[in-house]
Image (spheres, one colour):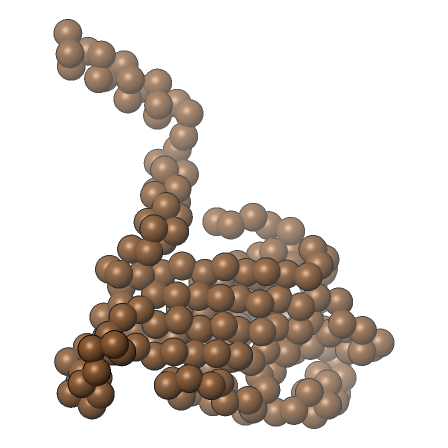
Length: 201
């Protein structure tokens, strides 16, 4: 009798949600609880752009304060990897550059939009034995975190159509061998989906 009730309950619940919905819900709850990587994106506008828009991606040469020294063009690289899945026409600057230089390069390439981003903050905590041997500070053991700032600029008018702040932190189960730049790929892909009006998938 007990197994029959359990079977009926599971069949009822399975009709409400698909397995992928349950998996995504579990991932979200675990990241919110701090067990998995977590990110929070705050946008100033909820604008959408056309899927056939040509987006040029560049990163500022700003080195973030904190103990981390991320690769010079890592935000632009990860943004490119996230955007190329949703926008067929995407190009990335080869190296970090100033805003005026990035705008000029985007216009010369014929891009409709410039996605200009930078690491505003990065904190690389101790996450493996090598980092412990280098620092040997108990207060430095923990979860990596970082903040990225994004500006989306229309190249023809130089009008700032959207800004975003992405705050990310590592998870307790995923902090081994992680760096702040390892946390930014997923939220940048989510931002690309948001520009198309697509929800989290």
